[in-house]
Amino acid sequence: MDGLKRKISASLQAQLSFWLSVAVIATSVGGGYFSFRGTFHEANEFQDDQLRQIAGLMQQQEPHTGLLITQSIEESEDPESQVIVQVLAPEARQIRLLDEDVQLPASLPEIVQTVPGNRYTWRVFIRHLPDNSRLVVSQRTDVRDEIAGSSAWRTVFPFILLVPLLLLLVNVLVRTMLKPVKALSHELDQRRDSDLSPLDDRHVPMEIRPFTASINALLLRVKRSVDTQKRFVADAAHELRSPLTALSLQVDNIRKIALPPPATERMMELRGGLQRMRSLLEQLLVMARSQESVAHQVTTISMEDVFKQVLEDLIPSAEAKNLDIEVDTERSAIFSGQLFDALMLIKNLIDNAIRYTPAGGQLVLRARRAHDVLTVTVEDTGPGIPDEEMERIFDPFYRILGSGESGSGLGLAIAKAIVERNGASLELRNRVDANGARCGLCASVKFPPGPVQA
Image (cartoon, rainbow, N blue to C red; front, side, top):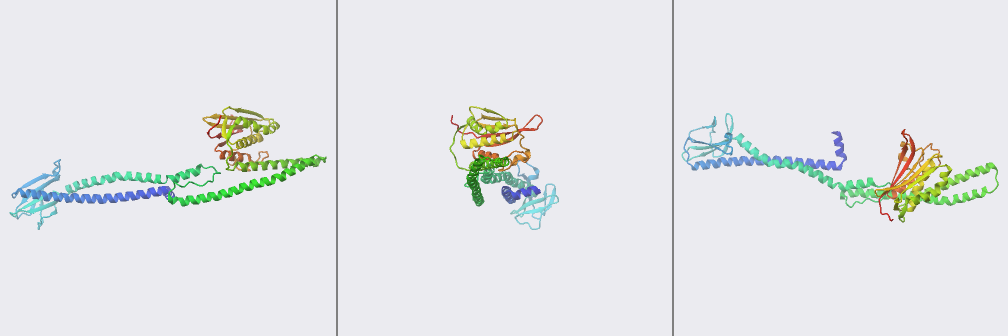
């Protein structure tokens, strides 16, 4: 019960449905009650009129004293529903109704009145005749009430049938009215992390628009902040690029001079550090570009050509570790996209695989098209990724501790940004051997269906 109360208090739809249902039930109960009482009263009035009409008809027949007539008002001729007509002598104060004697009141006005008997209560109408005799028309009140109640229930029955239909209609209407709000929520859930565009609130109820306007204002502020950070990273990388290039040239010039072995060793370490710094700056620039929302020229791209261009740059690193690289592509492995993005995506995935695959390992590059979806996979025989690290592996500058490999931790972050911008998907999963142990990593990219120029 407490859980239901919390759900109702937390859900606008539940609150509207609950209180509207309460209003419908309360209105229906009240309307049904007054309808029942009104119909019951009208039925009693009609029965009283029947007694008067019967008395009028009998008076026209000039009945004689002592006459006893029973008349059923039901087609079934139920004895209990009979109307009893009697003519009494002027001095009579008692009548015989069915199997009991009923004492008449002292005053006998010509009105319909209730007279108690020993076993039943009777509704009686008395009319005075010209010869001072009296015409008495009577009927049991319990029979009258049963007939009136039956008529009243027939009137209320449509209310009883209508209430469930009204409750169902209320719930359907509430769901329909709140459907735009749910659609807006679904749109937010399906958005990429980088999508900070305003919400379309044209179909949202007017009462909700101030809330969506506040969300749009917040999204705008966040977008400005993110853009500022991106510009700062890109500008900083650009500003540092020239000094690092100058330092690298100076180091190369100094290397040409004959130096003592200790100085030469220090110079090589300095050169390696500068090279890593330049590589980091290049990756920062690539990441800043991959996060831009500016549309570049879309061309028809062959994955076979992409593999060739990327491997031309990375094959020296693979040969240094004596890695075996297998390429398996189909002629249909083509798609429409941005060549720069495709090159950067595949380069970062292959570079990551080469970096973490031990010497003598193997890389398998595949590109297959099935059901109009192009799937590109990069498999390696490295250590894989611990399950607890999977959630953070795409964070910028995040590196797995104890891997023993140098790097900036930007490769997979860049790959993730590229696939999100192009509407593709990137999945990493560990490869396992027969014993269930990790024996490598498989990076799988699925490009969305789209027009492809042959």
